[in-house]
Image 1 (cartoon, rainbow, N blue to C red):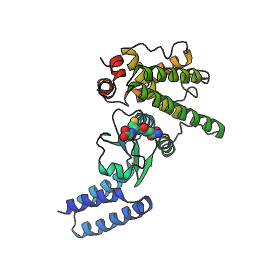
Image 2: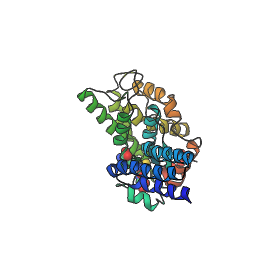
Image 3: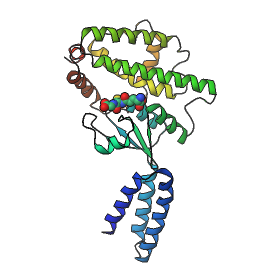
Image 4: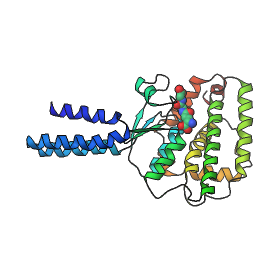
Length: 275
Ligand SMILES: N[C@@H](CCC(=O)N[C@@H](CS)C(=O)NCC(=O)O)C(=O)O
């Protein structure tokens, strides 16, 4: 009975706003400490205090196992060695609590210490800041430049998603051309290796890695030649795909599920990639 009550409190605590959350979390701890000490249940008290505290500290990523933007955040969390919980949702049948929590009705969202963050680029900068050392440049111009390329990577990912769900040959060809042009533009700005800023993995690397992973998978089904004549991007893609955080950012059945998604969500791309 007592445990049930405490469990309810832990759940409720999660939905409170951040400043209330922190104050009330410790108030609740204190209250239970007094009650349980009265009852002389010190082991139970200790367990409950740890449970309340940990639930406040561990970030929770609201996720979908095929979303490339979620994957950017998973890569960042893994790079920063942050323990986190993942809650998968079905985007075709989103639960009410998700629609009430996510302002854009999109994943990823990150819940942490009673607050909710959305937009993967913002989430990733937050993750970077709470767990030093930073993988984002210190210099203002370099930082802004990295942000621009993170935005650019997100545009490439959107185009790739459109390519993998194209319903007609015309759409497919048009999107392929857009992608090809985007990648040619990118090639000129890859000045370092093995990663975007040189030796150190950065948030730009986390932002583009899901694109390269999917491109490689699509290329195993149909040669698109998107990286042909682009040696900088080829080398970058190779380095990212071999990175442990990138390898571990998807589930074991990712390839199968991704191809199955194409098969069931497109008319033309399905003929190309998922026959
Ligand atoms: N700009 C957003 C894009 C996120 C996004 O496009 N998420 C997709 C899944 S990959 C989504 O949640 N779509 C909602 C839907 O399909 O209903 C970010 O970087 O977080």
